[in-house]
Length: 366
Ligand code: SF4
Ligand code: SF4
Image 1 (cartoon, helix red, strand yellow):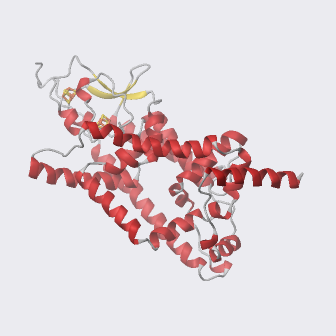
Image 2 (cartoon, protein in one colour):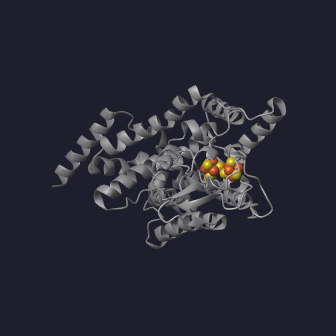
Image 3 (cartoon, rainbow, N blue to C red):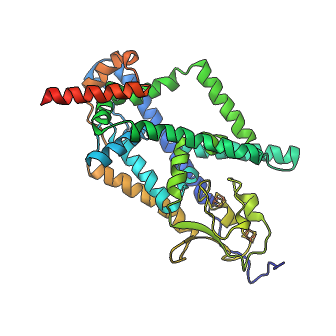
């Protein structure tokens, strides 16, 4: 077995501190958006347009289905639908980050991923004290459970990309339900049912026992980014010549990837968290590299690049006028009065109905 010496020791500073602060920054941003949106919804209840507060467009980042519809609508028509343009821009930003840096959104920016990581760290500490090791779901269950998030994603992809036309997408995106989907989402959490609370508590508990339970098994957003991340040219690479087979990379990986047995990590579960790179004691043995020309991407560049790509795309959305939506205060007030009667189309039959209705309304316009 090769040995660790003074010459081959890895002296590069870890990047986890930066990752923590970036995650914390994005989580605080989401809290701020939540507070601002709370005041916006409260101001709607006054009923006077001049009293309606400002609405933070970033709230649309929490409407991923609507954003996915806008994305498909954009592919079909070349137009960015103006009901939730910020949601569209945020989705494009997140997908772009994953096409360049793998599933980095999950481990660098997602507030749910951040919370999941914090409670997973706590769970790991408790497990190590009690059982001297982290708790893992047996492989025989792990694979079928991991497919759940892909099944959820497949359902959304089918419902949008295969069952809807440009006309029915427009009909849905223009529908009052979609226009105030953010307000409805807020009320869902502000007036949460006992059943939803129990579900959240169960997921919370499972995430303490089984690290990243939500992200690994259930999150369809993670499934989408897992697929797009496979297209990323930048991968974690191990040099088997200098590797001393210490296994520290395996222990550090929150996704349970066997980093020490591959030359290139090619996994939909790798979130480019760089934990394995930080843990590797041997210089230049584990690195993020481009698979094409094998250029090393420094840890700091990873941190900077992830944030920069995202901010550039958001900035482009803002300067191109695709950030604030076109819903007037008067419209918000009108829809707010009838919120409970604004339903969601739930079945393929509903979508077919939408297709039919949109065909009819376009015929009437002709
Ligand atoms: S392989 Fe490395 S970068 Fe990927 S998830 Fe595991 S620790 Fe993070
Ligand atoms: S690649 Fe993994 S097994 Fe090899 S030296 Fe680095 S941490 Fe140890």
